Length: 288
Image 1 (cartoon, rainbow, N blue to C red):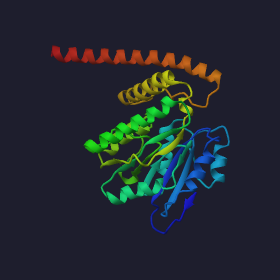
Image 2: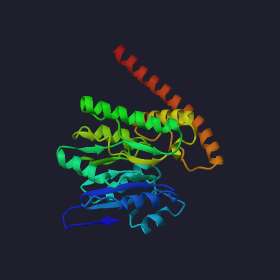
Image 3: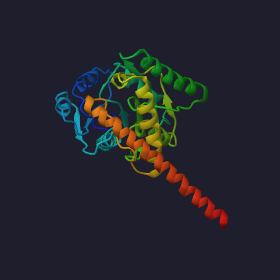
Image 4: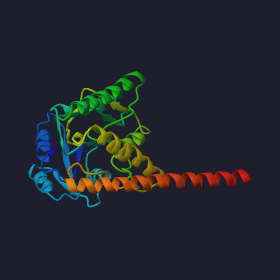
């Protein structure tokens, strides 16, 4: 999907990773077609081993389809970014819709502040439990408040961030989901201001909240977001594997639960071994 392309360099590349998103991708692409932005942009859908007709639907709606066989959202976003021709990469998701002025507001921020490395906005969950909608409001309300007070953006959502391609040297594909948010903002802040516009949200499916608060807090957030991200950075390679998909059957969920217990035990063992190794090194240095 390419709009109003001019001879000069494309302004925006909207990159959307997708794994089995046949139920959502059409609505996402239709929403992007309604954008009022009058500059040039392209839409890239990265098919990350889908077993449904995600790629076919994306192509039917005019998107540029890129295939990435290596599983993982960082691999997918990296492939989409490499294929992108735009000056500015816009990261978003395949189960998300947008206000018609969304891209215009992003462009306004970059034009108003030429030193900007990235522009981010909040995510709003559509439907789902009340706690989930309240959580998103509170989280991004806090991000906005801190940004207003100290001028720093401490968190971004990968479903709503745009950054200058020439300031980013690529995603760390050793990192899991979360690396496309935590590591991205960590590195971009070294290149320039990351601005936050709390009045320019994206609207995302609440399916990730359907397994309840306890599952989302312990499994999705503590283990596969915080613990896995830091373990992978610490050891420089994937440790726990990909987080459980939101689109799995009951049998697969049972398998994921067993896998979860196993990888947690492995993670604890690795941390203990790491501690012992550091302790041994410390003792050896002290003896010299």
